[in-house]
Image 1 (tube, rainbow, N blue to C red):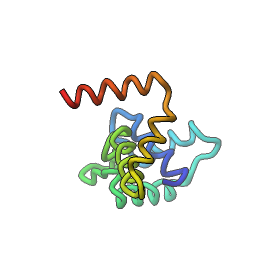
Image 2 (cartoon, one colour):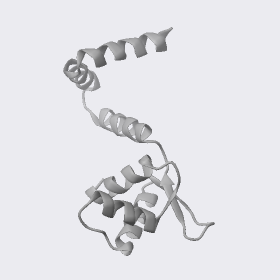
Image 3 (tube, rainbow, N blue to C red):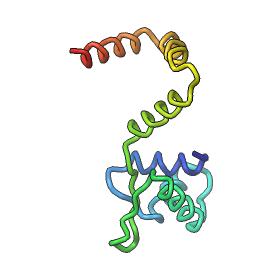
Image 4 (cartoon, rainbow, N blue to C red):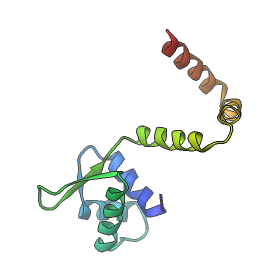
Length: 117
């Protein structure tokens, strides 16, 4: 994702309600130094929708947008995509596990034990 796409996704993930394009634009202006044009926001929302990251409710005016999946689900998909493209998955997993914090390693152990039970 590009920088603006990521910023918009973060807004949608952080929101408890669907947002209109104007609400996205106003929220971006609060988080950034500049306020993007509404046409830019609509273009990016359209691209995110085509990629399957955003859903659009066209039954209401103005249209409302929301994230198609949670931030966690998106991250899992990214990890699965990266792991799936690795030539040696076991080596990648070994390097990943070797580099995580001890508390995270303990949590991974717990999750694996729960899964195997």
